[in-house]
Image 1 (cartoon, rainbow, N blue to C red):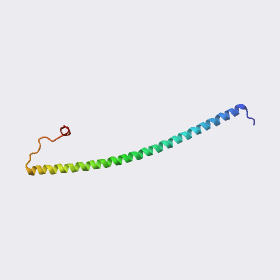
Image 2: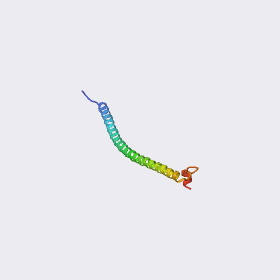
Image 3: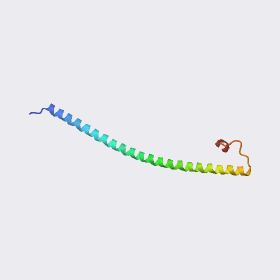
Image 4: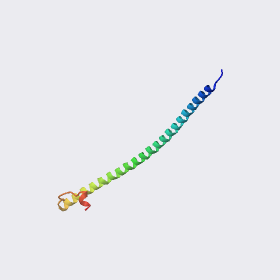
Length: 97
């Protein structure tokens, strides 16, 4: 069987296309792996931030309960001493003035 120049050119074109497709696939694979690693790092960071925020919420909740108990104790003490309760409760706006 004889190969003509046209056959060799077609073979070169087909081999070139196969090589280009393979190189493109390898590039996409590397990008995909890099993105997956980046997502894993971001997930870990988010989990750490979530744990820190949960700890802060717990601290704030505990402090809030402590303040409520102290307020109740102060109210009882003022009742024992016969001090009249305030007419309107203080708000954040009134305390900042």
